[in-house]
Amino acid sequence: MKQALEKYFIYFMFYSIIGWIYEVVLEVFIYRWGFSNRGTLFGPYCIIYGVGALAFILCLKGLKEKKIRIGKISITPVLVFLGIMAIATIMELIGSYIMEWTTGSWMWNYERFAFNFQGRIALNPSVRFGIGGMIFLYGIQPFLEKFTDKISVKALGILSGSLALILAVDAAVYVIRHLVL
Image (cartoon, rainbow, N blue to C red):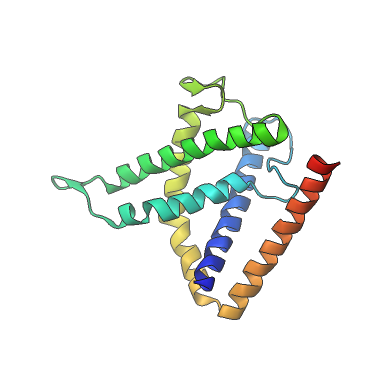
């Protein structure tokens, strides 16, 4: 059980960092707005991506392994894609409310997109998250699982413990700077 939790924590941190990189690339190279830290904490991670990735892994693993067909055509990937979109959209909506409650605002505004709700969620980003989720779930996650399966129990503990310590210190500094002072 401990090793499973350590693996999931490593997945969480990995995808939080990948999410931060994705956000920065969008901001700097695609939208050309310049750099800003896209995470809510100080380090290079967007926690919502890590939480979302864990939700995809835990909620969609069973569906991903099923062979659902209409005639000879497998529709499992389509259902997984729709599941990713739904999970990501719900998480983004909830995340926006949590950020607004804790910081007074949220870090994105989708009002420029069609089919948006209060600028918090929109169809366009949901489709992008669906595509990204498919890349991660079918492309990256199998390799990450093989990596965590191959490293020793001790190395797994050291890696996950070190990442947890970094995140805990970062969160403590954030709380002290923003909520206490």
